[in-house]
View 1 (tube, one colour):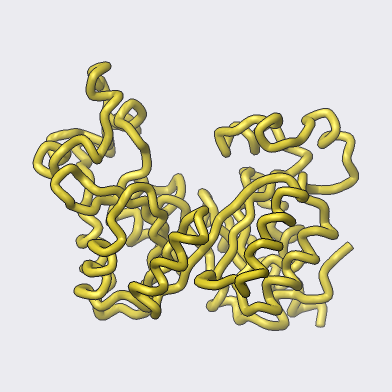
View 2 (tube, one colour; view 1 turned 60 degrees about the horizontal axis):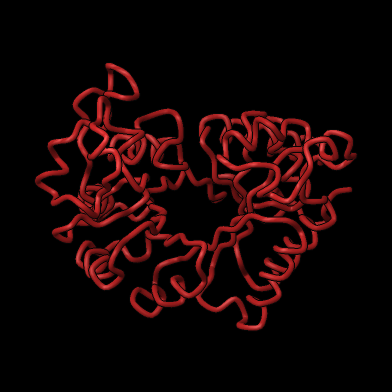
Length: 307
């Protein structure tokens, strides 16, 4: 089963949106300007997770606390997070050494540093994944940097995206979601009632049945929380926990509303890209942007050669 709609017929390769998760995926230290630079160099939209310090500085940082990314952290500090420290205090923490010697001495960056690297470069876009931030302050920084059209605000909460569009109408927005087919159908039905108000992109999370255990580990979730059975997944003729029919149907619905149809496939298997593109997907978020771009190009080359 394949979709009647194919990306090669509608979107030029250079215009396909690929989101580099946390900056440049696993290729560089997450949520750093260096990672964003690599993401841009690869032709992708880097993603930055954003939080606000105790004294109101917006920074690029993913985790809620410091237990993972501060090497030798004390038990007390491990329980704390960005919101508990001033920016001056935050800059005293080495948040790179945990990843290896090459990253030792890395400090948390201000979001404004990323904006400075985007100013006057309209080809550079950045996803902002909301963790904990004041929207008014964020909007002021975006407007001051003149990068509103280059921002894609990402959140699992539609109300946040609607609020953001009132503050920076020129920005794009991405709603990300995961769940079972019944759960996703219910959410999409609610969004349809509003005409997908405030949303320009939707990202769903796809889990390959053939490597579900790996996918669950990468996503940091369990089969029970996802509402699937590993045994049933292995025996399924479907390539993903979401059926091909559902993925095709959702793509048709989103494109009818002018919404970019994106997926985050939780796997290191490069073979999933061709399968998902055949099902009508048109954008990817990835921890492996180099592999994603390679597989996209190979897919375009195969399709064009077969014409």
